[in-house]
Image (cartoon, rainbow, N blue to C red):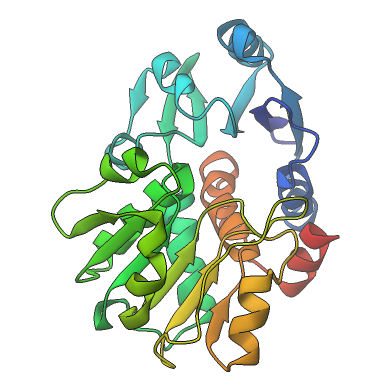
Length: 271
């Protein structure tokens, strides 16, 4: 029998994480001798908590809030992808050393490619709402897909300004309705519209009928933004796919098997 492969996700709090459902589904499906756990590590105990995982023989782990930036200081090596995004969400442990990468950009792009296969990233500008970690991953992916122009806006404009360079321009949050009028792609990376949060206040009545709207929120799966877009026959992509596809890369790194994202898995993650 192969060695038992121990993996997991670290964060604080961590009980909300869907990652154990996803990874243990694949572990069972592909007959892998291993397990994936959620591990609550307080920010004050990050170094000692990670050292404990190394001592316990973990093969690797995912990283969620609030550790995605601070974990970088503990990594022996960080790949160019994670450096450019400025966050690590996936760690592999080799010989007691941490190797960090980021799979969010892949998850973001793959979600759109799979669920809107005829969508052309190069056709026009993209507008990103929000300027946090998910926005940074989306920016990286959009640049790789040769999007000609990217507008980013955030309630705190300074955060958007910090991401502006080259084809990426920042605008005031109050200007978002004007910005989306000629957009090819509109992405909500904020928590607005999430269960328990206020709705995203945005007017999509004047956007192009050929535009695509992607909301990375997946609780609820269909936010008010997506419901409104759907009622106007505007193409939409929900947020659950980004979560599932970003998980594929870590699973492959640790277990040597490339997993498939299925409807059954999506339903499980949304349950």
